[in-house]
Length: 128
Image (cartoon, rainbow, N blue to C red; front, side):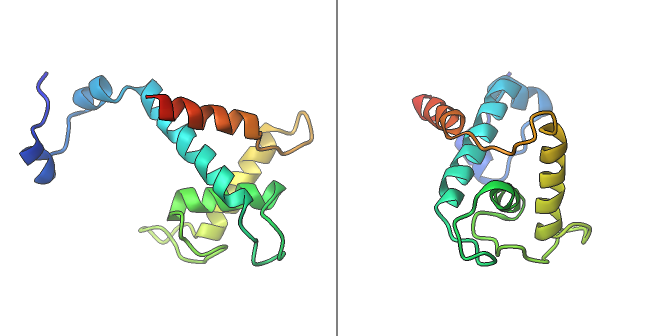
């Protein structure tokens, strides 16, 4: 397979699926995603929730990190702005992710974002 040259990239070259998987395999995609989420968790833990006036923790932390993933790091907290299809708002997305997260963690009854785990993903990402 050939790589796109810099001129092609600047002109908006779209790689084929095969090129994508060859040069950015699923394991690397997962690692990049986890590092991004870990960073969002770390940053958001230090921010004040405008609803509670306290630092984001627990369920609110999970909702806010999901909102940032969906709408960008500077998206407004609990905004009603929606996706391009008008189906899902930032607030709805955060609530949906929290519900899914809660269902997946119902066995132990706790919601946690483990700093040591998120730090590991961030450190692994910086090593490459």
